[in-house]
Amino acid sequence: MQYVFRGLCWLGLAAVAVRAQNPLTAQPDVKSAMDYIEQHQQAHLDKQVQIAEIPAPGFHEEQRAAALVKEFERVGLTGVATDPMGNVLGWRRAHSPKALVIAAHLDTVFPAGTDVKVKRKDGRLNGPGLVDDTRGLAAILALAEALKHAGIQTEHTLLFVADVGEEGLGSLRGIRYLFHEGKYRDRLEAFISIDSTSGNQITASEMGSRRCKITVKGPGGHSYLNFGRVNPIHAMGRIIAKFAEIDVPANPKTTYNVGRIGGGTSVNSIPFECWMEVDMRSSDEGELDKLEHKLLEFARAGVDEENRLRTRSGTKLELVTDRLAVRKSARDQETAPLVRAAQWAVRAIGLQPELVVGSTDSNAPMNMGIPAITIGGGGTSGNLHSLEEWFDPKDAYKGVQQILLTVLAYDRNIG
Image 1 (tube, rainbow, N blue to C red):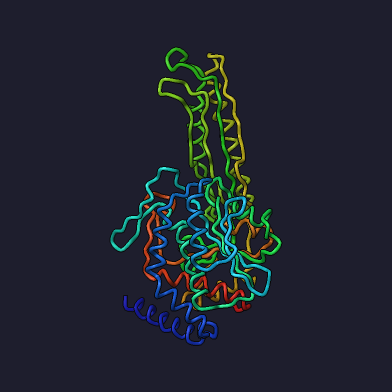
Image 2: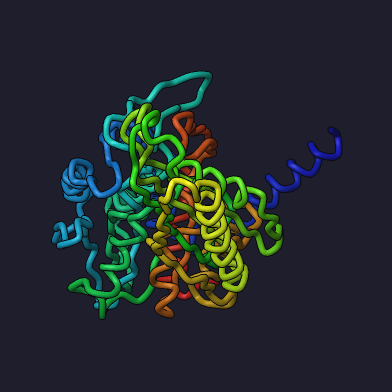
């Protein structure tokens, strides 16, 4: 304990020394913005709670988007508008027409009807979607406020975006549209996604993912009168059991998940259909190929086995497989200006940067060769994507300060 205490003291003194020697943070306007962010933390937390309590299920983000239009106008962004995909855009225009995009996503993983009321307990805030990505939305609003308060002028135009469709089968549709088809796509030079909390972590590599739907179809029938016919749910159970036993590598980290299943019409009916949706992720495309191959192999085997067992019925199952979404893995260079700027910003607030692999909106521009990173909005959190999602607001303002310094370091080619 004594050793740890001394280490923490040394880190604290080192952080003070870094800030004291830092020419950017010593500038009056930047210092003013940094101070503003710290002094207004409670107001920014209140805004986070307010936004979190506006439902935003995937493909139905309209209500939250309408609120963000008003918020973008409140913090002084200009030309605020909603694009054809549903993204909310707002500008801080500068001398250069080339824009640095600063984005956070509107959608959550929770379906319509979920209780999104935020509750306070033991110094923490609890609520579905409170962190992912409501913290990001609150952070970009706080950033815009601080820039306006301090009168900071950047060389790059800054485009603030509250985007749709990051989660689930949204498959980054908002950011994909912005960079591939959006009105301003030729002006977008670099991209920063603010997602969740993250602390000192910088997502500079994006894992790949495959999302598949496996459907098994049959004739259906009465559970008693037609007993012995092929049953799609029985087959799906075999498929899931086989797939769940796959051994995947820890490095590169490779994962799989059966996230949704459905089918059947009543307890006394043999279902005529059963389906499941599967998510597979890895930073290695080869591992994803193997995992997807195994999934399809087990799907065929599960259907064949059910067909063999029910041969006497004269009925057979049909297998249908669909790819729902594909994301290719990608990475930015550790020496790229945007990554260097983010690392510099982390050090400037007294932490040691850590480059990590993620699955975020940055995947879309990164796969186009456009510099992109994802960083957090401050605070600490846990149980993301669950009803028990929690947020600890202690020193959350430091995350917004880090975002500010990352933007300015990139804008001024520091790092």
